[in-house]
Length: 542
Image (cartoon, rainbow, N blue to C red; front, top):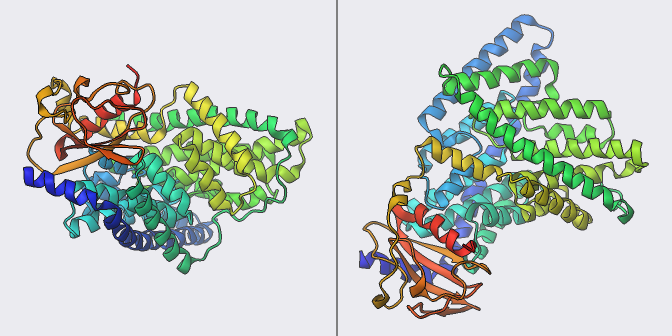
């Protein structure tokens, strides 16, 4: 056990150098995987369009297509039953494993998620490629870790690198991939992690863009910067996006609940409902099928009326709930951006009629609403701002993007709406009978023995050791208290303390300060429990 712990600490000291090379490797592997996935989905969208043209106006062909949709539902249902971790976006699964609450098998997740996501987009479900891309990239990182026989601490870093590479390759957005991995997946920053994640993200984006081109995902023109006399409209838009973001989160969670209420529904029958709904919409309103990227062109070219935009938004919104609630392997990331674009378009069209807004600024509001809607739902404003300027190729809207994102963030927070991926992770854990370490909640966390040198922890259980980092926030219960005064969680050991770039050996009389970075060692099986306990200690004031 002591050898295991000492080896973990020695290797952690070399992380800044080791992780750069491994981040490069993970970026290359995960970038290739996601690029292949992206190509497969491109073909799926093209084939779906050809199929809809072929069956149009032919009743027998339509019946045949519905039969194929049922077969695809059965196939995807079998995949979900074989590997439940591929259900849904995949981002909550990655978050859960990085903090030690879930466990995935890369050998099963990679092929099942790839095939399941392809079939869902071929069937026309309103899902995106980003969630699966992040999960596929993360599993690429886990696979490399397992093949190289790395420890759990290093594996989580490599999974974060893979998640960053996945988003970068999916959207040609390396900076957003890096920020999302740090802000949403790992929920922490360190010099070694930052450099390795950046390396993975840039590598994946270079490989993907070298083969698929460097054009931004959204190719619509922004001819003018929004004048500041119109900024008061940004406040209204931000509040509207915050309200609709809260509604979106509630509807997505409610859709999952409704699917699970009838006992007669299982993995396959739930998916059959979504696939058949896609079949019906393919006949009456094919524009809402798939991720919805094709809606951007007519919206930004002025080809859609206000009424059509509102109807499309409502149908796309409800169809997204039907698709995602079924447990189909696919993300909500891209569809919610399209919904945001529709909100922005409708808002600008209304502003043109009511406030005399120049129609030339419609595209500005389309872009701004995508960022604000993303922020209200995911609660990752920095990622949202960076993502939209990378996806649009425009950096001239940064101030207005920031204003809308901040207002929508504040609105959603005041309404006490939980970020969507946290809600989904909590439901995933509840569905599995709770966090795998939940049985430790009933343990009595004893204060450390003051004679132990002030290490701030208890003896560790056997098994592989994991290092986790936490930053003490101003006003937390740890600030201005000594190590020996803190009731540390059982089975964790405070092994390092970094202050102002200097490493301090923590002792019983060491006084903790805001901004201190704590490195804690624990057993793998306790990692999720310790993570929650230390976050409470570092971030709360009571």
